[in-house]
Amino acid sequence: MSLFTLTMTINYIALIIACWFGLYVVTRSPRRLISWLTGLTFWTMAGMFLNILLALAPPPPPHNFPDWLKYFFLIWPMGTLEEGSGSWLQGWSITLSIMLWHHVTVLMRPGKTDKWRSVRVVAGYLIAFFVIIIQLLDTHLLFISTSGDPLYLNTLKPGPLYPVVAAGILLYTGMSIYNLLRSVKEASNTIHREQYRTLGVATVIAGITVPVAILGSTSSIPVPMVINPVLYLITIIMMGYSVARYSALSEGRTIRRDLAYNAVAMTAIVTLYVLITWGSVSLYEAPVAAFIPMILLAVTTHMLIDAARSTLDALFHHRENRELRSIFRQLAGGLGEQEATENISLALDSLSTSVRATYSLVLLFEEERVINLARHNWNQKLPPLTPADLSADDVLPIKPKYFPDSLHNAALLIPLYIDGTQLGVVLFGQPVNGLSYSQTDIELLLYPCDKLAEVIYVTQKQKHDLAQLAKTVASGRAKIETEPDAISAKDVENALRNLTDYAYLGDTKIAMLSLVQLRLSADEGTHLDRGKAVYRVISNAIEKLRPDENDLPKYPIPREWHAYLILHDAYVSDKPNRDIMSKLYISEGTFNRTRRAAIRSIARALEEMEATII
Image 1 (spheres, one colour):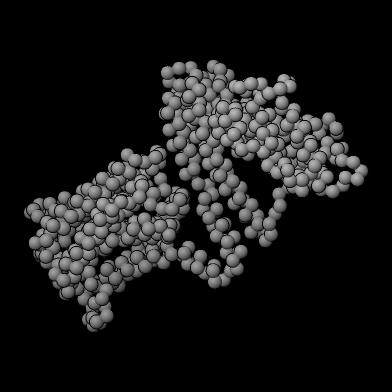
Image 2 (cartoon, helix red, strand yellow):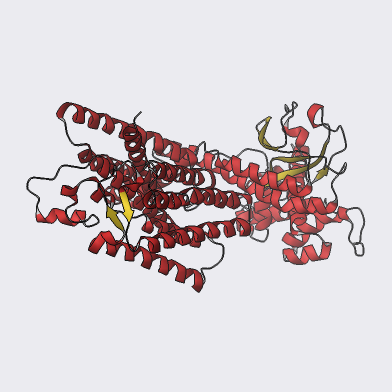
């Protein structure tokens, strides 16, 4: 491949990717300033690639040049169409891209933007606009065009103001790198650190182009023009990886599969247009430059389809239908996404490192199976396990060889609960420096594991909601799921939260139990009477949690009293949770786990009481 073909190909690819990726970031997060600044950064970088393409394959001057067309060529010197390659190269500066990206890195810094950062941002934009004005008035102050080969950087020689502008670009590139390094240091979690680190490396690679450009334009060394586009293309790809991998530069969670699908679709579209272009150039000798705007227009129009669809929905659909279609598209985009699993793996790595665990596993319950969701330092085969083998009401220190085969040295099991339902467990191997974990280590792990359960629950609920929504759209009406016959912990918890609301209790599933019906006399047939009976049944079940001792023991209150006191004080006596925790000397995490275990015990007790009647 010749240097000309290589340079054209790299710039063509970089131009398309820069335009596409800028549109992707903006359309996925249209309400964020950082997304628009990033999009503008990519689009202004695309201008440099376009500049090089026009310099290598300049369009022929039109025979009848209308006056209005000159407004589309303001960034290029007068007479560019007639003068050729060197004049095209003078028409664009990377300065504005550097200043936009510097602004992005300032916004990514944790905390509020102070006055000094704001001053730097404003000064950067003033430098960029100063360069633009110089190019419009007299571009020779920056570059002096020569008759050299446009495939090499020494085609343009520096003008009087070039050293000043080059120094400003170097300064702001360095400040962008500094901002990202500070962000890495101040980041609160692993994901953000990796995100800033990746963007920092990308900025360093882009910064290498500045000394390369200075070397090429100030010396007689024939530095190929293609070097800088290659470095910028690597930068753009790394930024795209950061968006897909770490949700950088976007609002909330970026869907990696959405990015991949969009890239594949755009590649297919661009390939089709390139083939058409190649055929037109080969058969009809059409100028290559004439097809550059056509391909850019194809990328733009296809990227704006989703935004246009949302606008058209507002015109042709009722509000309820629009909301349903919007929710369905959002859920459909998240189906099958692996990002949540990867984030859980990163969180598990941090947890395991903090307590120096030899290994750790996040195991989920799926019907009668146990699924390995995430792992840390674990490369072995999981032994046959069922949810019953891992069922636990609270944290469970494990004795050696409690589990078979590869899990024989597991040391700690932390159950993952949401609303009384165990989703799975986090299993930790023995610590590096011991056989078991201290109470301090266990307390350190409890709160993050509770948050881990919430993340897993939200992910599972999203998939469930999508399935339900698909059924709703297909049938045209909402489906009401039938509740199982058994009394669940969720039923009991809802009843406890409304224990003094007899009207509510009278319409619950618990009110249909035989043990409730037997407490009603012949003249007690209203839902309020049923609610009072439910109150008595639940109160009686709570009393069954009370230890055999008649009187409450003195402080400190023994652990066997905790389940009874938490339910009785929280729901019967209606005491604040903080007072109960203070009374029992327990943390919020222990309070929640004990409450969940007690509610499950009440649900089971009600089922057993019902079974004795039947």
